[in-house]
Image (cartoon, chains in turn red, cyan):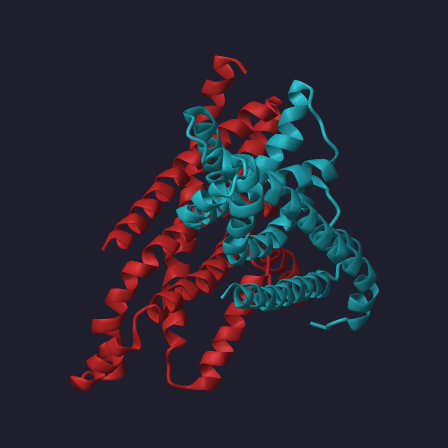
Length: 215
Length: 219
C-alpha cells in the first residue's frame, strides 16, 4: 500500500471509527440503564417475578449476538416489523448488554454479605433505601472489573453490525478493500484501531481488579 | 403475520445438521485451544523474558481485537501474501487462536494457584522438572481452571456463529441459507435461536454437574 492510498483511506477509517464509538456508546448507555434495572428487579421480594426475569436473561445470554442481530434485522420484517440497520444493531447490542450487565449487577449484590442488608433494615431503612444507600454502593465496586470487561467485548462486538450493513469501522474497511484491494493492510489497520479502543479498557479493568484485591 | 410451522418443519433437518456442525467445530477448536493455551501458559511461567513477552503480546493482540476482523485477516488478508486456507480451516484456526488467548489467562492463574509446596515436594521425590509439570502441576491447574474453561466453551459456541461470515457451514450459515431461499426468515431464525439456546443451556447444565463431581472428589 502506498502512502497516497493511505492518505486517501485514512479519513474514511476515521469516520468508521467514530461511528463504531457512537454505536458502542449508544448500546452502552441503553444496555447499562436497562441492565441495572433488570439486575435490581431480581432482588424484588416476589419469587415468580425474579424467576421469570432470570429465565429471560438466561435465554438472551444463550443466543449468539450475531443470531440476535439476524433475528431482529431479517426475522422480524417477515412478520411485518421493519427495523432499519442502525436501530436494529443498537437494539441487538443493547439487549446483549442489558442481559450481561444485569448478571454483573446480580453477582455484585450477591457478593455483599446479607448481614449488611439486615443491619441496614434494622436501623429503620426501607428495603429500597437499604439497597440504595448501603448495599448497592458497596456492590458497585465489585461490579466494576467485570463491567469494564463487558465494555471491551461490546466495542469488539459492534463489528458484527457490519454484516447487516451498518457503516462502522469493519464495514468501512470492507468497502475500502472493495475499492483498493489492499485487504491485508486495511484489515490490519482496522485491527490496530480496535486495539487502541479496547486495550486501555483492558488495562483499566486489571488495575481496578488489583486495587480491589488489595483492599 | 402468519406463522408457518411447515417452514420450521422443512428447515429443521438442515438446521439440525448445522447445529451438529456447530457443536463439532466448537469442540475441536476447544480441544486445540486447551492444548495451545496450556503450552503457552507454561511458557509464560518460564523465567526467560522472551517467551513471556511473546505470550503476553499474543494474548493482548487476540483479546483486544474483534474476532470478525481476525477472521477477515486470515481469510481475505493472508491470501494477498500467498497464504490461503479453505473456509473450514480458516474458521477453525481463527476460533482456536481467539479462544486460546482467553484460555492462557485462565491456565496462568490456574498454574499460579497450585501451592508452591506441591512443586517442591514433587521435586524432592526425585521427579525431573518436566515430570513435575506434566504429572503434578498441570493436572491440578486443569482442575482449578475447569469452571472458567467451561465458560469459555460456552462463549466459543456462540462465537462460532461468526465463521458463517466467511462461508463456513454451521448453524448460522444454514439459517441464512434456508431463509434466503424460502423467505420464512422469522420462522427459520427463530428456530435457529431456539437451537442455540438448547445447546448452550444443556451444555451449561452438564458443565455444572461435572464441576460438582470434580470438586466433590477434591475435598
